[in-house]
Amino acid sequence: MMPVTEHSHVMLRISKKKINCPGFATLFFNHAIDFKPGQFIMVWIPGVDEKPYTISFHSKKEFGITIEAKGIFSRQAIAMEAGDIIGIRGPFGNGFEIVSSFSSIAVVAGGCGMAPLATLIEKLGNSLFFIHGARSQQFILYPDRFGVKRHICTDDGSTGHQGFVTDLLEKKIESMQKNRDKLFDMVYACGPEIMMYRVFKICDIHNIPCQISLERYMRCGFGVCGACVCGKQVVCRDGPVFDSDTLRDMTDFNRKALLKSGKIVELDKYVSWRSQ
Amino acid sequence: MTLKFLGKILNNPIVLASGILGNSKDILQRVHDSGCGLVTMKSIGPFPRDGHKNPSVIDLGHGIINAVGLPSPGYNNMEDEWKMLENRNFPLNASIYGGSVHEYQIVAEFVSSKKPDFIEINISCPNSDKHGMIFGVNEQSSYDVVSAVKKVINVPLIVKLTPQAINIGKIAIACEEAGADAICAINTTGPGMVIDIESQMPVLAFKTGGLSGPMIKPIAIRCVYDIFRTVSIPIIGLGGITTGEDAIEMVMAGASLVGIGSAVRYRGIDVFRKINRELNNWLDVHNYTLNDIRGAAHQQKSSSGTAPACMGSSYKRSGRESESGDTDQSDDKIKLGDCKSGEIK
Image (tube, rainbow over all chains, first blue to last red; front, side, top):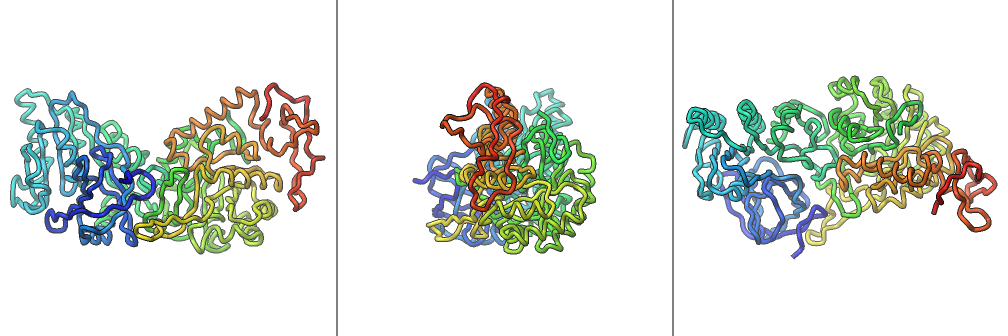
């Protein structure tokens, strides 16, 4: 079996496809890959494009990527079927840092930000505080997957708390303080950048370290082309996971990002380009 | 080891190649802080341009193939960036490109007004049918671009050349005659192609791409060697330089400064400091300065067949040589009085 490497793509056949919810599908491959939660791979559909995705399912012999249909590439990707071939190179970047001595951990997922956190949750085990936010009940990814209790919030209140994941995080920290419990050793978060920024800020006020996973337009995946720079950080190589110390100095976090041309724009402009 | 290059003081002879990082002031600052003597901005074009679709950069292990395709916000669409760069504490090389002599001129004049320390014109990128390389493979078009740009700028002009030119030495002469202050060589070579045999398609979306990294170093060394023999302006040598020893080799071919690009992939962003340290270690061990070894490989061995012990800093190039490319041995002056211990092997 050809190992997947950081060099040119290895072409893999989709072994099965699972529709997660409207507009979301997971493509599975019967192939081993050396992967750490939080890393990403470059996914190539010949003749279409190549984009970075995290691995959302990982075992010794199989892995899967969850794709949300947004643009030309992702629509094409979720329309693919078992037997179709896709090129993979990677994994790239640094994953989440897991420290075995952590006894109190929170994981905060927003929307498709659940994907990179899924394998992390499986690695961390069941003693963690897990918050998951989505548009509505039907968009809760992997609803029956984890043994750990999930604190859900939705935009429309169709299930769980109606509001933001940060509401639940703040409430939990408040109650920990009130009970004089030890605060979290680490908070892991992935979701819209504004959400991650708020998680970071809440954690920072309480001196809780956090790690978040950033998204930027990428080309090379290994830190030379500069397409994904965010402040002084090269997201594909230095990240995509960044810790509180780095985030504190990251001038463009939740502020600016580069378009494909290299033009540096306000984040909302970047986000609207990316969701086309 | 500070040095002077075209009238500017640089902390060291290591240069960031254009197209590598170079997208914002912040990242240029970091490259500078990582021990780079001169940072180069990503090539700036006349209009906003997205570049090519992905896959656009692939690591082949022994080097990289890329067809990023000259993305640029466009010269007059970068106001915030120029503003930030006004207050920089590092020397800056601004790379530019155009699709016609006139476009090069417009971009160059504007960029010059933003006061970079140098302007580098890219007449060598292989990843566009309309920009870059089509100018740099021909002496007349090279001359035309360089002389037109030279008229409208008031900072030193560096011209970046392509190894695709049939005779890169002649292109360098045309650039020097047109007023270039320095030559930068080489841009990516090829272009090459990688075909995926399962999908039976070229991997790069643009199909072809420029090659860089260790696999092209011998081509880069040969090009710089050829250029050194033909012009008297300084050369920034680059192409596959990954270690201090590679940098020494490039200086011996004739480079005054040494550029780093793909090595960022293989050794991280600290590569600038690492290579500079390795280069200095080599010089220390051999008791040489950079000036001592610049162009050393052009030195003829003595008639007895033994290697001369050193070249001496006053080694003079013959300037434009006969087109045969044969070395005129009478110009190879070995100043034995300057000899230092240690041999060049």
